[in-house]
Length: 336
Image (cartoon, rainbow, N blue to C red):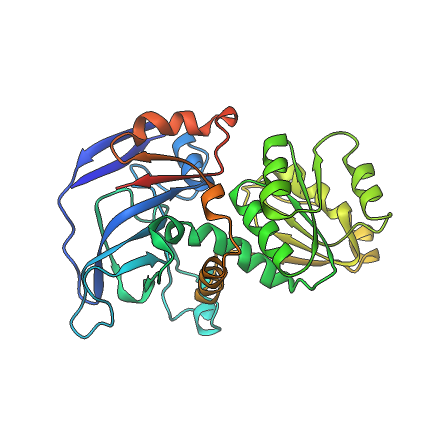
């Protein structure tokens, strides 16, 4: 079968591999769509610190059931999505029902080979029917669920003022679901095109382009109060540190980004605001189901999100182009 492997930073190749054999309790999935995300681009650049090369990337997956275990509710031909966070089910986090932060987590495409391949075999407990939303939308469930999870973590309420810093795909998902909760959303980014996307397609109330005047602009928008909830999706330590100042008194700061750095903040300011600081990691099945329902209800601009696509065979040539900011990628899909 065709498989694309990242052999080393900057080296993506199409190879032939044996079709996987379905293990006990596993489902063999014929992969049809793979979403390309920031994690994949970091792997290609060599700036993702949590994996070893070579690696088959791809964790935003949809496809069709090729084989299922005897007695499974899944049937050959079912359109499915895959939860790529393979949790152990036994650790402290899993016992609390928080498998998204499992102590022994294995993320497809990061800790073990992912879905940039014609077939993948995964445990049945991580394969779910996608209903009637189609293959494209099913492959977008994962990144949307991360934003959904962050908004749920912050318990966003109607009428609150929300700031999302960094509106790549994860920030876009966060802005969308915060707005669907009834919040007034401001987006902050260095790229005007991403800001315009949020204003046009997501219903964001305000867009601010990063500059030396950013704190003043955000203060003006909120009448000096700043934001009930701030979400960081920049992946940049300095941006994360700056975001503490944008949280209102009594507000919440949610860190979706993961960075290999120590993050510092001013303790008197933190306590003066009685800031709530939250980490938000991955997503749960409830988040995936929430996103699926939102797509079925027509609340997610799926077609607008999918700005680029390519075949598996063409991916080694086009991925370096997609990485460049001028490409304007929101969500790229690989068709298999």
